[in-house]
Image (tube, rainbow, N blue to C red; front, top):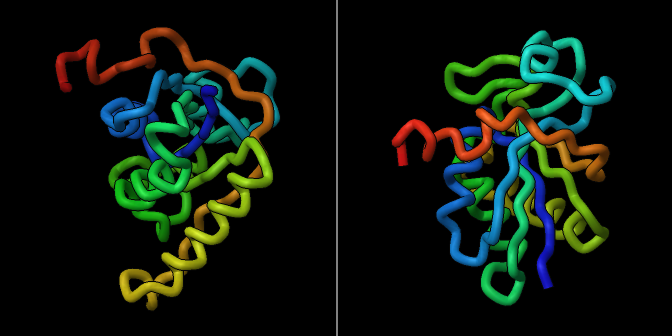
Length: 154
């Protein structure tokens, strides 16, 4: 059985490249989620007017990699305390987001966020990661898919 997971953690090129290396991840697709415009383009999303986040949607084999393990990759590879920003990328499309596909993912995401918030690592910073039900996913343009691999950066 193949399951889906969807995360936003800054520029989707970097996030996709991280998850593609995880054993048990069968495929990744970058796209836009959480906004108000149907069929947004990259330019639409970058305008800051659509409300979409840049995300990576992952298909994974839960017998090889668990959702909790995917959450660990997510938390360890971005700063969940910066609102609408990751590194030099600024805008609500770069927000830290977990889009859950079922109640089990929602519960796991909330538990992991709470544990991290109560850890020494973030005791003086608030984690701003949103945890919301997945909505309409729009696949990004083909040139964004596996961008790092296309550019020889992997």
